[in-house]
Image 1 (spheres, one colour):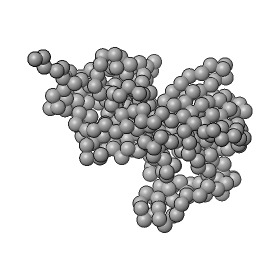
Image 2 (image 1 turned 180 degrees about the vertical axis):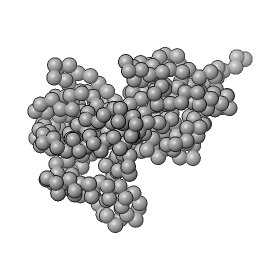
Image 3 (image 1 turned 90 degrees about the vertical axis):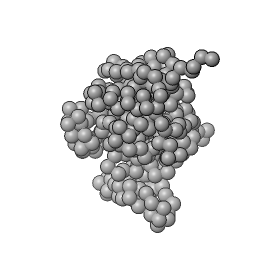
Image 4 (image 1 turned 135 degrees about the vertical axis):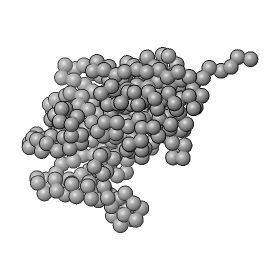
Length: 326
C-alpha cells in the first residue's frame, strides 16, 4: 500500500518585514516535528504584494499558506485564498497586525505562531469583497479582512510618510491625522444599504468593517464580529472641534475601555447612534460619490474611486488559530 504524501506548507513572506534566517529555522523545525514535507518559500515584491505568489502556492497544491508580513501581505494572501479551502496562518509583523489583533492572536511570539501554524485548528471567517470604480470607468476587485474606509482614515493613510512609518511605527500616523483633520472636504454620496431605498448623505468618514479593533486599544466598531456574515457600517460626521472630542471620547474611552468587559457593557448600556456617529449592519453597500475620493483597504491606500460595491463573503477564509482558542 502506497504511503500518503506528507502535507506541505508555503510561506509567503515580505523580505522587509521578517528575519528570514530565524523564520526558516522556526518553520523547518515545526514542520519536521509535525511530520510535514519540505516547505515552499515564496517572496513578495513591489510588483506582487502577495496575490501572485499565493496563486503559485495554490497551483503547487500546498495544504497551508503562512503569511509572514504586515497587513498588506495578509490582505493580499487572503484575497488569493478566498474560497479555496486552504487555511491561512498568520505570523504577525509590521505596524498594525490588524487581523491578528481582532482574532486575539499573540503578536510578539514568532516561534509560538509558527507552532500554531502546524498544530492549530481552522476557523472560518468572513471576507469583505469590494468592486472599485475608477475615474476612467475601469473597475477592479479586491478583498479586505478588517475594513474599507473613505474620508479621514483614507486621507490619513495617503498622507503618511512611508519612511517615518518604517522608523516610528504607528506613531507616524499622528502627523498624518493632523494633516487630514485640516482637510475641509466632506464625502457627498448616494448609497444603498442591502435592499433599502437609495439615500443621500454628507459625511466626514465612511468605514465598512468586517471587524473593529485597531492598534492603540482603539475599538472603532464594538459590535463587529468577524464571522457573523455581516459588515458594520460607520458614518461619521462630527460637528466641529467639539464633535471630534465627543467622537474621541466614545471611541477611545467608551468603546476602547468600558465596553471591553461584560460589566462595562452593562454599565454603558446599548450603543446609540447620534449626530456624530451612526452605525448600521448589512451584507451589501453600493455607493456613488460626487467626486473621486481616496479609499483604503486594511490600512493601505488604494487610490481614488468614484463608486464602489462592497459585500460580505461569509466564511470565505479559513484561519489557523491555536487549538485551545476553539
